[in-house]
Image (cartoon, rainbow over all chains, first blue to last red; front, side, top):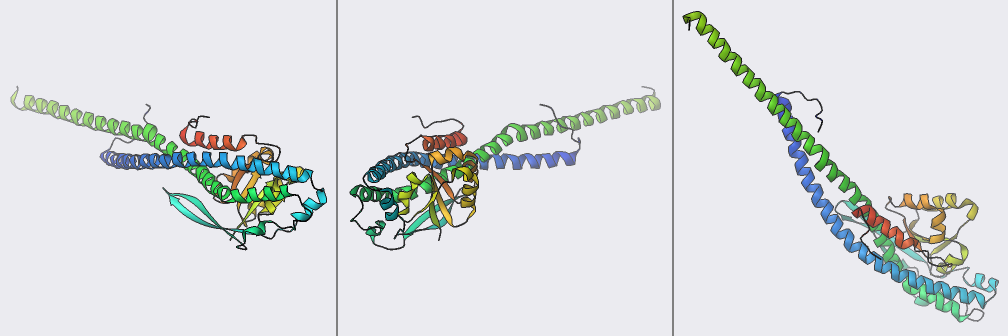
Length: 215
Length: 104
C-alpha cells in the first residue's frame, strides 16, 4: 500500500499510535453497532413483510368491495355518501432511539369513540357492499398504522446500517492498515537512523584511537 | 397531533375518507408538485400512496425515505397490486444487508 508522506519523528510516531488506538476502538464499537442494528433490522423486516402481505390482501378485498358498491349505486349517491366523514383520526408521534437511530412510534386516537361513526351516510340509498368495504378498511386500520411505523423504521435503519457499514469498512480496510503502515515506516526509519549513528560513532572512535595510539 | 393522508387516484382512495383519513386525489398533470406540498405540510405523520401514484413519483418517494416524518407507505390501488410495495421492502433489505435475503 502506498504510504502517504509522513515525518519520521518520534512526535509523529506517538501521534500516529494514538490515532491507531482510537481507530481500532472506533472500529470495534461501530462493528458492534452494525451487528446489533442488523439483528434488530432483520427482526423488524420479517414482521414488516408479514404485515405488508396481510394489509395488501385486506386492501385488495376492500377495493373489490368499493368497486362492487360503485356498480350498484349511482356515482352521485356514492360521492355524496363519503363526502362528509364523521370520524377523524389523529396520530401522535413519539420517537424511540434504537442504536442512535430515531424511529417513529405512532399511536392514534379517533375523534369519536363510537366505532359506527365510520359510516358517514344513511343506509337508505347506499348499497350494502359499501358498508362491507368501509368496515373491512376500518378493520385493517390498526395494521395499516403499524405497517407505517415498522416500514418507516426499516427504511431509517436500512440507511443507518448502510452508513455504519461503510464506516466500518473504511476503518477496517483503509484507515487502520494505512496508519499501521505509517507507524511501521517511522519505526524503521528511526531504527535505521539509530543504527547509522551507532556505526558513525564506532567509526569515529576507531579513527580517534588510531590517531592517538596508532592502533 | 398529526393526521394521515391517502394519496392516489380517486377510485383508490375515496374509501379511506370515511375512516377519517384525508383522501387527496392525485392531479395527474401536477402530481410531483402536489405530492411535494403534501409532504412538506407538517400536519401529516403518515402518507399512504397508491403504488400506481408512487410509480410516477419515484424520486419524491425515494427522498422521503431519509426523513423521519412523514412516513410514505405504498398501498395497492384499485387497479391491483403491482408488487411495488414488497419490492421497496426488498430494496431496503438490499441496502442494509447488501443482498436480498428475503427469498420470495
